[in-house]
Image 1 (cartoon, protein in one colour):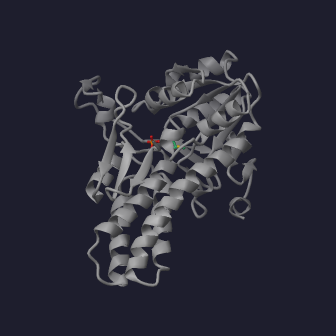
Image 2: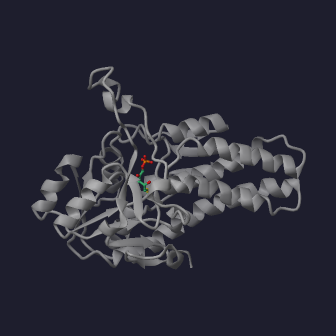
Length: 339
Ligand code: MRU
């Protein structure tokens, strides 16, 4: 199944629980806002484009659960739900993008029933479009990869981070589909190991050769000419920086030092057309993610912890941003991307 989808029979959201992979594959159901917010906060569903779908389906769910008898009241309920969902994870702009696109669409309905219908159909459209967008973006990106390349990636920007196909891993999938022999080096991505748990799992499912390394090994592998290109996803792109999983910045600096091309693959919905590096709130996560590993204590219980989920990589370290509208080589103006 897709990473996240709407179940028509049950009138609820179904998603793969990513906290359990790779040891357990389980599909869970969210039939109320609280369970959806919990799923987003605890990363059962994660990755910027998947969060866009989660936000969009969240509004559809809020519409279904609302008892509003007027259009004004329903719109108010949807905006209220939007505020609650948005507060779960502040950095990935796609979450709010998905929600507000659905809310805006409902505001164009003629009656209450129309609002409910539009909420669900627009959310489904966002999910379907995500797959198409990733495939288009993947084709553009594949032109940057040569037969025989080894590509390093960080975190999980694959089908699990999207509705399907993936952004960074979508580029790799598209290149493989074109017959290119591509090998992947997946960085573990501490502290929550999305690279070790999810990227390796989904690439192995597709028989794409992947080797797992600890994050601290990326300098060693790049210096020893084991990496031809780096491709990562993004949670937000401003004119001056790319926000992605913590550790991305380190890889970008090392790649530049060794003249290894560093690419970002992301849909247009990841662009923050009004923001700049300083305006973006970086999510700070629970200190216990560093003090414990899967329930096992690995640091003194009361050690102070700093645990930002994302970092910013200045645009000057990025050789290309791959989108569904083509490849943009920095420096570029966001107006070029928007048009
Ligand atoms: O905290 P996560 O797992 O949601 O972080 C995900 C990432 O940083 C991904 O690289 C990013 O969302 C791009 S996914 C196509």
